[in-house]
Image 1: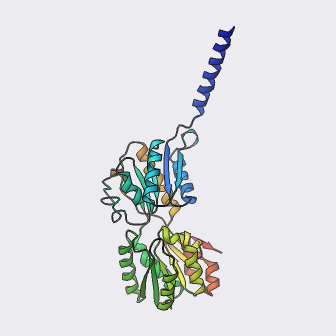
Image 2 (image 1 turned 135 degrees about the vertical axis):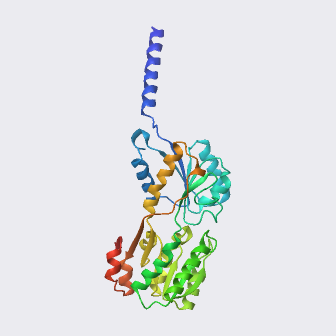
Length: 322
């Protein structure tokens, strides 16, 4: 009798184990490292993954780690994710060049980076990455002049602007040159003002006051996003037009933004993951630039500044924040 009970118990346990295995996720496990909660970026990426068939039992498990881009912390998280293990790791923003340097080719990295990955030392070239990192760069030099054109269209009287930037951001020199060239063509004078990583913006704000500018062009990177609301408040207080490249800035109170559609870019990032999971090598996947762009206008800020937004701008706007 005892043997029969043991036999039945064993059969029951085996059936339960088989059922659990049958319901276990069959999808890949992916790491995700960012300096802040990924929010809409992660949502857009998962939407892209679902469109490629990673849904239901095949859905990817995303191991998210939110950390500062501190080398020791990044190294620890890389090791933690590799031990799980994960098939590859997605790196956002300032995390990307640090992770590339510390990864030493051990695991594929798919990066979403606002700067120039060549200047940052992450890849040999856009077309031939030559290592274990690839992904998207949001640096769009051809759009720099268009932001200034939007500012001039909104306020034709603008004659002098401040360019606010992080001088350590990879690609900043190229973006600055493109900005100065565009300003020269439009007859606009510029003042270049730096904010270093971790530095409070107060000194930069005082410089902007002294320069007596009429507008601010902000180069986009993670540090500027973090300061976005403060810059917007300063610009409104000083009656200055503030324009940058990502919709996040308009949502923080900037007058307008013109640049890549980041959600579309993160959906596109899923194609890199899909190809790597199917056996492609990172060094064979060219780094891409965004292909979809958006103009976002903040009418609340325009009204506070007493600006009558031209119909030509409103008709082209992809989003109008009321």
